[in-house]
Length: 88
Image (cartoon, rainbow, N blue to C red; front, top):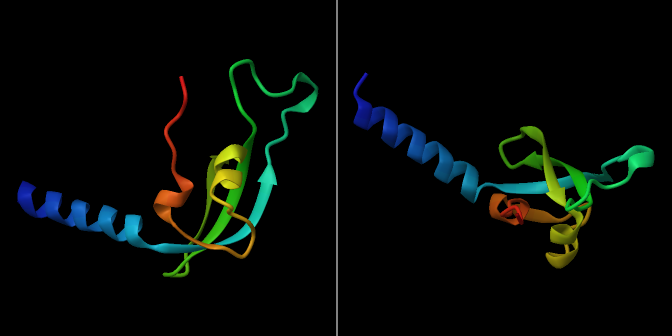
């Protein structure tokens, strides 16, 4: 296959995902058991979404991001709202 055509197709696919809207169906806090949140870690949540093209998927998102961005069940968000940079 032509590398440029494959690259353009891949680029289009990622742009499509990035601009897609998702409805938040469920948010659950991760269960850390009796050990608790790992040292230098943070509380993570599993976020179940429905994309505008009908696909359902899970994202792992820090609880603080959900609170900072006021994301809750029923909200419509973009992919970028569910992504974040990890603190090291």
